[in-house]
Image 1 (tube, rainbow, N blue to C red):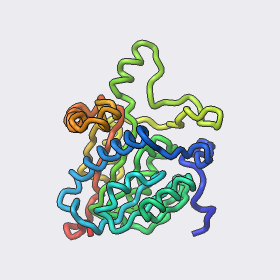
Image 2: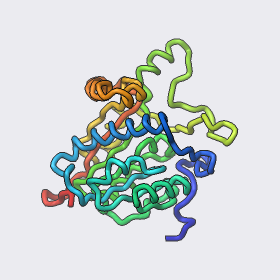
Image 3: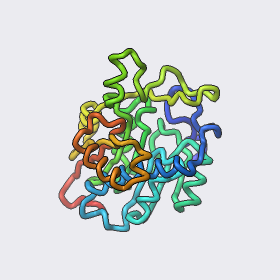
Image 4: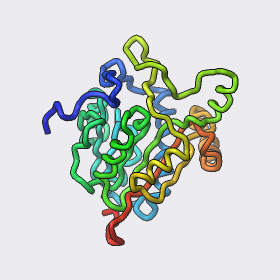
Length: 264
């Protein structure tokens, strides 16, 4: 595949998110907190995989994998780990850590894989950066096997924080009023916003079935990372009060063409 066909930015907004200043290897407390977030996502995915969770032959694609931290949890149930991202430095880390097959890729373009190839596709904190989310979901659906699973995560615009902030005239979280430039690195570049209803409906519109929406956290991530009891408590709370969670985890299945189409 020509190199120029798969490089560039996550969104259409014209900002080069692959610039080196966006690459920040996580260490210490930041990494511990990030891994706690990935563990929560993996635990939710495992529930949906059911009898397939102990297999070691799943083909896994992480769209927007960055340094591949989700692979830490997926490696024991995967025979192939594939990662796409816009950041070459981050992809190098993913290759070195997890022996993943990585591609520097513009996520606006068709994904560089054949149809019906992956058992599990992950898109973690990506869709909110994508201008045409319908095309993006169609791309994910195309490369999934019938019966395969998608795990997609995104911020929740209806988080309890925003419900408290907006009535008092405060700017909502997870939103940005400008593009992220080098001199404004804290502007996160989110251009699409979801709540539980919108996310579930859009996945159904694109042919996904058995759509489940779960909360990422209602307890501070650092507490969860430090004390296991808080992690377990959060799992209960985030499942019960998903619409208040700062982050949403959607797990959905590609519609099976026939009963014989199972994960292999």
